[in-house]
Length: 334
Ligand SMILES: [Mn+2]
Image (cartoon, rainbow, N blue to C red):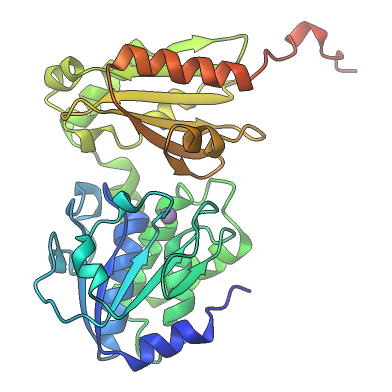
C-alpha cells in the first residue's frame, strides 16, 4: 500500500500556515487534490490558502468551499508551500506566483507524474497512484480529524477525474478502495460524474460538433486528429476551457491507436493534446515537444502557426507509429 513518508507527515503536523497550489489550467485532480488537502488541514486546525492563478473551471464549481480557491495569495507569511499534481519538468506550470513559493522555508511536492523530479524540500512522487487525490487521501488518513465529508468530496472528484470515472488503466484496486472510503465519508458518485463528465456549456457542445465534423482519420496508422482554429472558437462562442474532453472523442474511434487535438489558443500558441491506446505511449512524444503527461494522456504547447505545428507533430507521430498489419494478414478465426 502507498504510505506517505514520515517527514511529510511531520511537516504537516509541525507547521501552521500552508500555501497549497497545483498546475495551471486545472482540472478535477488539480482542484480536488489541492482543495481537499486544504480542507483537511483546516479541519485539523491549520491555516491554508489554496491558490490557482487560472481560477476554478466550471466543471469543478460544484465542489465544497470552492470560493476559497484564490487566484493570488492574500498572505505573505506561509511557512510551507505544497504543490500537488504538477509535472515539475516545467516550472511554469505551477499555478502560484514563484515569489510566494520561494519565500516559504519549506516546499513540498505531492505528485503522480512519472516524469516529475524531486525539486522541493520534501518530495513524494508516486507514479503508481491513480491521482494526486489518492496521495492526499493517504496523507489525510494519517492526520486525525482531517478527513471531513467536504475533503472527501474533493478527493473523490480528483480520483474520478484522473481515472476517467474509473475507466482508465490507472483504475487500480487501491483507487477503487480509496473511492469507496470517500463515498462512505460523504462523496456522491452520481452528482460528481454529472458535473465532471456529463454537463457542459452549450458553446462547448457546439465546439465539439465542429471538432467532430473536422476530424480526420488515417486507417493505415490508426491515427485520428482534429485542428481547431480561432474561427471555430468564435463560431461556437467557445473559450479555451470548452475544449475539455474533446480529445477523447477524437481518440474514441474504433481501431484508433492515437488521437490528437490541436487548438489555437487566444494568445496564438498551439496546444496539443494526445491520447493513446496501449501499447502506444505518448508521454515521450510530448516531452520531445517540451510538454509532459502520462503514457496514455499527454500534451504540449508549441508556437504557431497551427498548420506548421500540425505537420510537425503528425510527422513525428508517424515516424514512431509504423503502419500496422492489415486485417487480411491476421490469422482467420477458427
Ligand atoms: Mn493528476
